[in-house]
Image 1: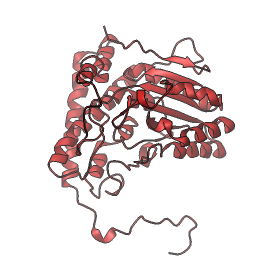
Image 2: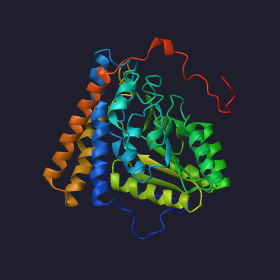
Image 3: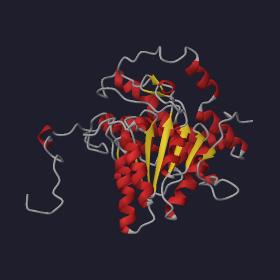
Length: 350
């Protein structure tokens, strides 16, 4: 039997689930979700070796432990829906369906990367899967997603946008400006908080007087929901309901996924570890690993060991191929250093 946290999702202030039964993933979607979760984990685990080899400059921020929150949310979106991420954002494009090879090339600063080697780890954008942009600025993606929601409204489409942000960004004023604007104009925006309990090395318990971030939505007349971020199916269910609500023109929702990051805040730089209890990480790895929970859930749902093993082997090959692709790719030509700095949207002659 799959171990659950007991968090379960609970609705706050307003109701966003209108059906008696939460929306669930079909068999093919479950397989794809598991593949994406494995891809995030495999991609992230390959990075420390590339950093040690000097192939990735600077530090990277791993989302190992948070895969179910990312994939559960993105599986509820369409290909033409958009998302914005954070500084911890390799997992977001993978969760949305991005190819691994161009992402790995981007982290290695290669010309074949999604941003031609100019974005690096914390500033990815992949328009092919609706990634508007990711930013090292805490909360920096929230207004971009709100703008994308306004664009959909003005253009008369039923697209939605979803902004991922962490518990640290929940204390940034930009979240409340955008919540207010989205509520007034009923914009199709999902505000999705990955609450992993720590803003870098600062425990949320020391910075949030009210620990449930989703409750803050009530001040704007917006539905808020808390969900177990380690449970793929539960995240998918509440996000799907919020997305359908947005498509109906009923406005934004705030989802708070209670999750946990297994790695330190950043890999490649020294980060003190005394801010977490000695056995806390191991306890989460042992009892709340989203991949272990998802695999058990899939087996309960009727998927076979052979089927899952084939997915696992395929992902392992794909990660290895992505690393090789990136290593063999050229660095950008230094002569192109001034390219892409300016845009000419009006169409005047250069």
